[in-house]
Image 1 (cartoon, rainbow, N blue to C red):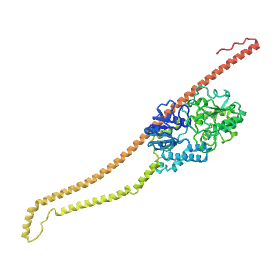
Image 2: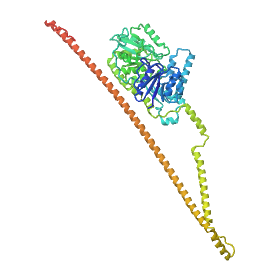
Image 3: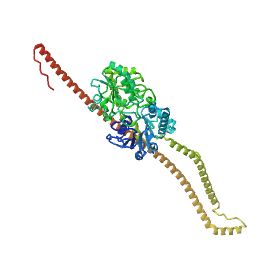
Image 4: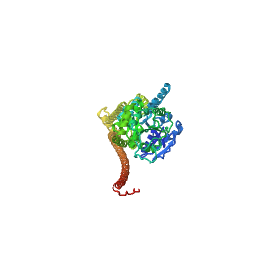
Length: 606
């Protein structure tokens, strides 16, 4: 397998958002089978997994990224990297571009409040970037089938979908495939340290937490769930809505949604009294502490293009990882996934009453809550990083046909234009073969004519003239003078016969040898193709075996974790039962003492 350079445009470290998490987890998976170099625009302050070498480049400084590109054979980069580093598009090796984040649609929402001229400039810039990426990439990753359809349309417009490519890859899975956001392979484990309940006022052990676990981005709709909270609190007084509202760890455009959401909570009299904001970005390795404290998750959005083409967001995958039901807006890939697997409820976008009803329904029905939690955990097991990253592994291990780029297509077109002025192979053979045949026929005729001439004159017949006595004298003189010449001529004629026969025999032999060599070459080519197919089959079998071993190890680890958790739960239940039994015995003794005057036994010491 080829080594891989992964370039992240976002921060990777103890505190990171979705783009950084994606590159970090993909690096961990690929490193199990190939060496990986992972670089980010800031130092990576996490211990690198086995097989991963971490590095740093400076955003916008080509001199800091070029050394990594020069040493790489295959590069995986988030498409947005090319916005500040056009040298990525000039990279001459195999380039895999990750298009999971539809930046162009995000920016349409992010800059909606800006002047129209600025928005137009940003939209044109984003469209140009996407065209350049689609023209250059050798392979592409996306996050959903809906995204894949979108990008295939772009590839078609850019002239990337040629008949030869479709013949080799009919469904284009080798060119562009889906690698969704995933969940951790290891099951979630709480560290035992205080999380939300130990950090926020008015949040005790008896409160049921409704958790907004992702960022408050401008294309999302946290205000609707805030407006739904008065109805929820009227039916479930112990419910508390918590937003994870820490500042993004990387440089991002300032969002207006966080302030708008706080202001709305204050206007409704809920800020700090039913609606809470956790002001720190949760460290990646501690997110399980926060997620496991929640009862129900919530993620809402408005209706726009970003929603339709967004990936299944990292926050929703975290909900599945910890096995928690989710209430989310309908209309995107995440809602389709959750509803299909009954891992939560989808509500109409912007519908306050529907959001309140869904939350109340889950909080009031522990059985329903338990079923959806179990379904969420099962779905999470199907979306582990080690599984969803397999299309990327295939791109690195397989001998995949590479779609020609427009530059290569233009070069091929220029070559074809020159070739159009030259005769084809068939035309060339049709011109050459008659010339060869004509020359051979001419030489063969000259040879045969010469032989016939020799046959006619080799005896050197005596000319007949004069009377009989004179002819007899001429004959004696002729025989005396020409006998040796006639013998020589006969020998030359015999040699000519032998030479002609040898030439004919050699010609037939050469044609026979040529035919046999051609047949032998075809046989060797067929054997080479067979060996290549067998090698590919063996590689596929080896890959499947590695995947099965990994899945078996992961399954055993998860099974062991579940068994340990069940043992701890049974032990706790036994201890609780023993405590209840001791209390019952003490109460019984006190009742008997009051009724019959029997002195009560002293309480037992633990």
